[in-house]
Amino acid sequence: DAKTTQPNSMESNEEEPVHLPCNHSTISGTDYIHWYRQLPSQGPEYVIHGLTSNVNNRMASLAIAEDRKSSTLILHRATLRDAAVYYCILRGPYGGSQGNLIFGKGTKLSVKP
Amino acid sequence: NAGVTQTPKFQVLKTGQSMTLQCAQDMNHEYMSWYRQDPGMGLRLIHYSVGAGITDQGEVPNGYNVSRSTTEDFPLRLLSAAPSQTSVYFCASSYSGLGGGNYGYTFGSGTRLTVV
Image 1 (cartoon, rainbow over the protein chains, first blue to last red):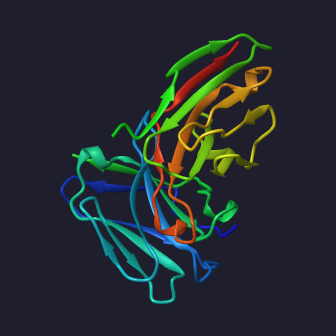
Image 2 (cartoon, each protein chain N blue to C red; image 1 turned 135 degrees about the horizontal axis):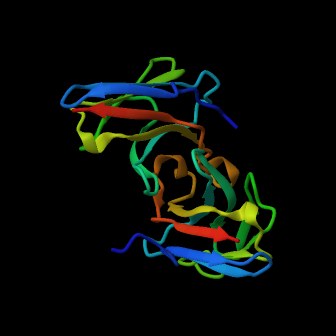
């Protein structure tokens, strides 16, 4: 399975932007880059995903490097509610095991008031 | 639109007992998965299904059985509970098909299981 590498933890100040990096040097051409987050004592929550182009939604932006070997999740204005573990995961496009999400340890984001 | 519903939310079992964790989704998703999360750790895939009648093992399948008789339901059975199965269990679902990578997963709120 393709792997991702994320920092174990990051800190941010409230109302400031946060850039969460993810390296995926062995990504295949058909893997989608997915981001999920898990708030304390809750199930994981979908944040955003993309293939090649940068993506924006109401929660965040995803910036994908041109060679696709790295990506960055951008929270434009961190709030205390954004404190969570953020997971960067590659998901294959076809049925079978490639379509599963295999979780790593993620990045624990702390937000200071 | 209820999403992914897991029952029960909490359960205490005695060693050797069996039980079934229920998972239901109302989004017509083909993919369904079960994960366990131990304290301070990430999620590990137990079993998954790519459609009704089709199941396969994930990273940690021992001690668990699954079946998928309908698109909506994907129950997880603990055959003979052991203390090592004390964990939080999450069910998830997603669209599949050739464009499967282009869809996100929806997770349930979890079942907290304690085996004594």
